[in-house]
Image (tube, rainbow, N blue to C red):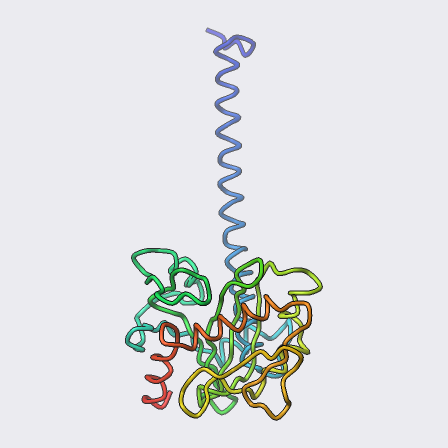
Length: 256
């Protein structure tokens, strides 16, 4: 019997075939784009880590080569300070780990306003040209005025002096709160110290400008007080007892 494409059955068959073809096309496109998104995410991660580590000579063409030669990602337990075995660390999602009840802990003193944080955090050890440890890069994030501000902070081998900082994602007010992205402001962090002589978090964002001789002071920005307060709070949290304080002591004891 000849197939009548103008019949009800023919219309249904045509619709089903068209839906299947479109479904396969969408699925295939999604798979291709997924891999591209992963590559882009890894590239952004590499660039941001190198910026936070203040590595010189990084260009659009050589950042992957430099990252692979100098940087070692390590997953560590914030509770014990010990490394945790893991694969594909470039694709490890700290943010997803932080919202998964099985891989996160509720924060008792939530000054960064993030509610929970991952039990295991991915950090980056960055070597110099001689293969010696130069910088440890740590992820930091917390609530600003409008959004969660995400960044990395690079620490010198003493795990107290700031080598560099970068904020790579936020939704703060354009032209005001986005000062966190400005290179001239980020460079003022270089050489500042997180802790004072008693081991307390002492780095302060100073409204009206910090004294250049103040090793703990970073300039605040007029008109963006609450964004600055958010950055201050995330520093206080991540370098405090529920953040990196225990890990830093463990790393120091182990000679980093």
